[in-house]
Length: 67
Image (tube, rainbow, N blue to C red; front, side, top):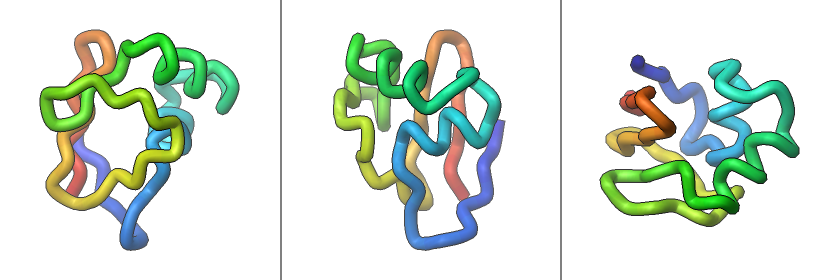
């Protein structure tokens, strides 16, 4: 999956919500806090991590490339 960034960055929990991978922001924050999201191969626990062009986000079997 590819996500085209419209601004300089998007916060991680908002990205999950925009892509309809979760039903709510609260669910996104919970999934992140429980260590189920990887950013560039490493577990990302910061809900508001600034996701930028070139980042690769993994959640379950979904891989999101940021362009």
